[in-house]
Image (cartoon, rainbow, N blue to C red):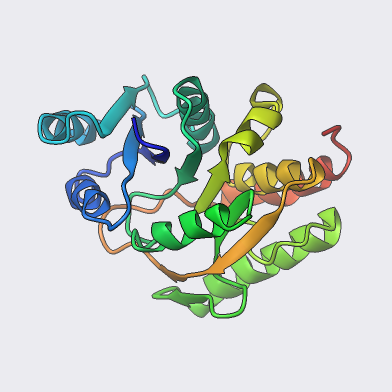
Length: 236
């Protein structure tokens, strides 16, 4: 078993899954991959199982029945990883909005002292590509809002591209994580910060998906907006 595990939640990612998996296993550092699939009707899980024959010891899949949400998929993956003693555990999307090559930079940040490395669009050097200006502004000012309410010293508070040291996920009470949509990413950073862990932002280029359908919605943004106020008063 390797030391590095990438967790990728999937729902209807048949257009991206094979290319993503092959790209990850071509990286200059060694990674294993766990796909947490929420019963994709498009055959995503079937494709992963086909690829397991090629990547026998490095590619894993956990299948769940029904679309249970981003946060629950990551919590499932975190527990799976901790039970198998991986040292560095990553979150990323399947749609290539996160450049797989940046995984190496996130890993190096944690190897050099960070407890949580965040692939950041809004720190110095970070960029966003292929988004309409309205969405960029909404995302940027959402992070400003989170920083003001939670006093969280992270510029990209909603980022979903991260590397955790094992001890962070061992220390956070994963069963107490409350939010499972967009606010999940905020809550995990906030819990890590409140526990005293060092969070480092690594500048990335974020590119909107080309293939497949975005899972973002107004409902998800609303949950995050209201959830931040609730987090301010949650016991960590």
